[in-house]
Length: 82
Image (cartoon, rainbow, N blue to C red; front, top):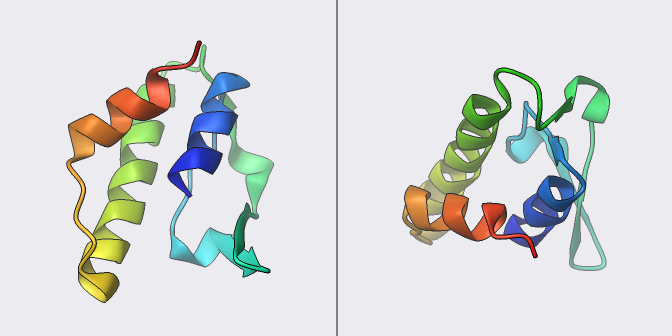
């Protein structure tokens, strides 16, 4: 899921409403749905939306699967596009 978020960011997009409800899994691969509200990185709230998306995903996996990641490290990883 983080890799998918990174790919979107590399294409200068942020989902802007990502949560467990907007992720489908098919053959063990995540697919994001409900992309109609996605924003480009130039949007004034893009960074806030990205942080909210990451926080939503991290909170879900921490709560349901005890998988914990630091918000800032994940954000740095997503933004590190070369």
